[in-house]
Amino acid sequence: MLAKVRHATDSTVAAWTMLAMVGVTLLTWAGCSSAPPAGPAQPTPQQIRGDSDRFFDKMKQEEKERAGQPK
Image 1 (cartoon, one colour):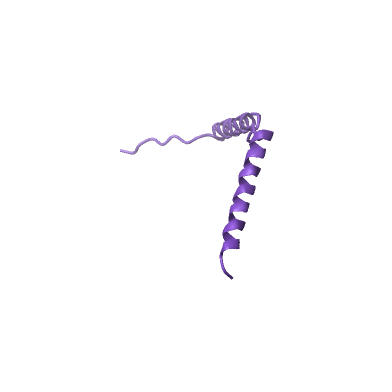
Image 2: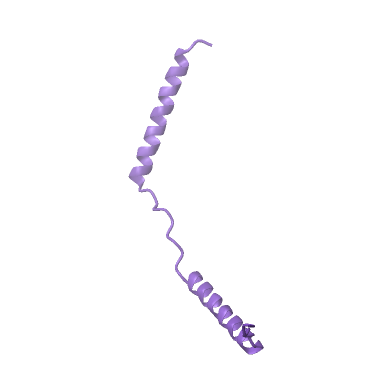
């Protein structure tokens, strides 16, 4: 007993190919149309001042430690 094999016609293959291309195009278009993510928040002047104060305090401490060490 031989099983019947159903062959796809050229128009069926063309229809599925077109449907796939339209689907990929729509997904690409929808993915690229969203707004880009916002960047990191900008630090406030108080945060910048606090960071720089800590940096200079650390530098002063390292200079004191270096000055106390013999060469």
